[in-house]
Image (cartoon, rainbow, N blue to C red; front, top):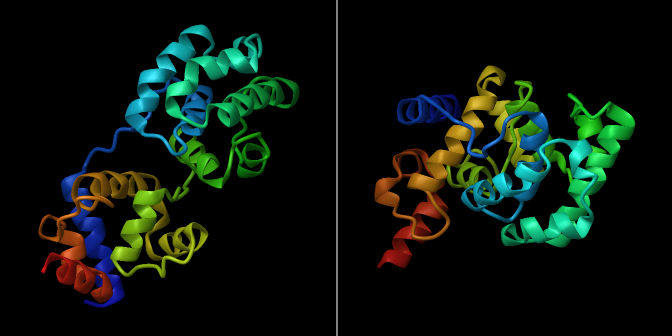
Amino acid sequence: MNKTEKVQFVIDTLERLYPETPIPLDHTDPYTLLIAVLMSAQSTDERVNKITPLLFKVADNPYDMVKLTVDEIREIIKPVGLSPMKSKGIHGLSEILIEKHNGEVPQNFEDLEALPAVGHKTASVVMAQAFNVPAFPVDTHIHRLMFRWNLTNGKSVAQTEKDAKRLFPKELWNKLHLQIIYYGREYSPARGWRLENDVITSTIGRKTVINEYNSKKK
């Protein structure tokens, strides 16, 4: 298979396995999505979805959020990890949304990435999932799989994002990044990975990755 055929194989396989792609983080609007994505850093969606209802019951908009102290926010979100940084970020960005954006989440990368604790990946998720603007947020699953599939050199997340955007049609980005995440969790995890269950890697995977897997198995 040449690279074009490999890319099409990935698209077809993922569409067959995941025709529907519900957003993994529970939210009701752009603000609650932004907070949930920020909280998901180095945590799991499952854990975040258990904690966000507790936070959003008290404050599901920036005006109510700034009424809480950083310590009060931290106490609620502690189970998701990195709570000192995340609670400061949530309080700080809520203040900025009120001061600069009339309490609304901005619909552009520049303003989103200027918010405290909001990096490019978080901004990309919000642009894609809240505003349906084409973006390709790269998380650890996508970074790992794109390397396993020999579609990027794996040197950095930024390079993986560039390669994904170059290889896949723009109109598929928003759905495809979720499909890859779902596939990574189910068939190609970092731990407990079984190549025989991973049809994409076993078909188009990087030879060094497959050889290393097979040698470890022996």
